[in-house]
Length: 261
Image (cartoon, rainbow, N blue to C red):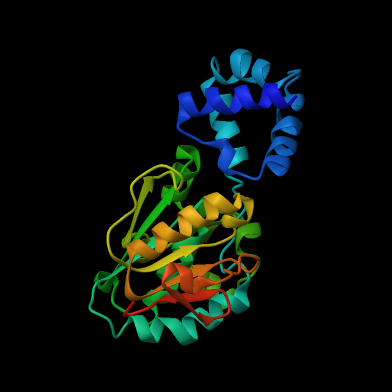
């Protein structure tokens, strides 16, 4: 099994650019083994040779499985309320327009949440959100911006009315919240990072990475942030020794890049 998985890691990287060695091996192997057994494959390499190499639909499902696309609006709402109350007023005093990166944005709930939060305190042309994910399938869904009630379960009725048009229990994000967002494919473990942004939001992604991969990503996040910019991570992703990345702990799970090194 170990040799089979090692070969699988290699051929997947050759085909997709996805480096599975940078994900926690035990968790990822278990997830993918459960996935390929559902399709009656007997090994990782059989899964690749007879499945992923021949079936684009299965390949997209595989990428969706790897990138763990579980999201909702205002996920861990108390963190978002603190962000809105404590961080947005600081950012709005920066040079406008603000440059915001929603990294590993999945099906779009996170960047649309950001757009709604900033819309309450800024004009639409005062901020731009660059939303990225590895999986092109989820990006297409994100661009459409239509969601079931499950994705809105943290929202009160007035918040639903503020952010969405509802028809037959399908909720579509209003146009003014779509307008500031650009969606694009991006691999955090391989592709070039954006330049000089005010805010990076990357939540509930780093927990699946190896320590080496996390260090690589956080180092690049810090290099991407403007001095005084913020990094907002998930509620299980506390950074230990943030100072070694040029960051300081500002609020719970919110870090700020130091203005001087």
